[in-house]
Image (cartoon, rainbow, N blue to C red; front, side):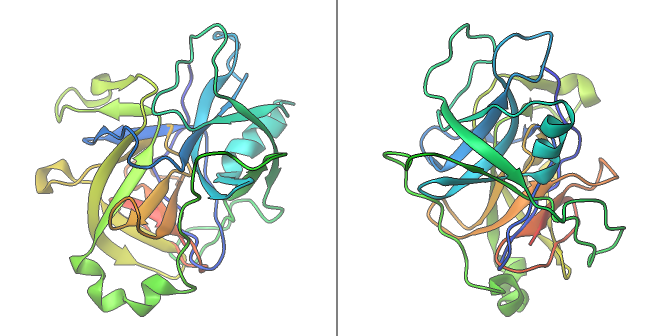
Amino acid sequence: MGRGMVATAVVALGVLVGALPAAGITFGQADGTLHPSTGALVADWDPESPGPDQLCTGTLISPTVFLTAGHCTDFLESEGIHQVWVTFAPAYDDDAGNPGGLIAGTYTTDPQYGYSGQGGSSDPHDLAVVVFAAPVAGIAPAQLPALDLLAAMKSALPEQTFTAVGYGLVREQKTKGPNALFYDGVRRYALQTFSSLQPAWLTLSMNPSTGDGGTCYGDSDGPHFLGGSTSNLVAITSPVTRPAAPRTRRTGSTPRQRGRSSATT
């Protein structure tokens, strides 16, 4: 059950953005049915764990389109893996012999995906989509924001609460470092506060000492909602070169940010 590397959130406020193999929620709580449009991207990528394994997180943005990270699908392509599924269940068991509820789809990586340098204006186009042959039944797609929403409300962002959602590694203890991480396949969410906004990245705090949670391995391309479960999807988790500085990319625009929890926009 290998897990990917960085805890970054990519935000797409006008354009959609992408992420890397799976990262998880830290200092959060079980999501249950609060964010049903958030799903897990699974594929048979781990030779030590036969059958489909959770790789990354993503979001249903239309009845037939699931947004996930470009680094996730780029990894699969490099391994010659083309069969993928998505589950929207509140929990996914990697070890199940015949897991149910999987929806098959076809992935496409953003053709501009790739490293584009450091800095808030860099744009790796870390985006990919999984397209389903038929509409997903019973799940309403996430609400996408208006173009440049975050830029328009920049002065008010310090007072806002953001919600990160994902499957992946979990941390519930402040001590023990990496030894405190574990994986159980449960979809979780954590609340975060604003740190900074740059042209391509949104940076959110995930400092547990101030009451914030964050993302970790397995949450790649997981959504960051502005506010609660019915609010706008404004960012997605994307990997960065420094594990200590996860990012969130903004959705609907081209900006991204870096911070205690960053996301591209």
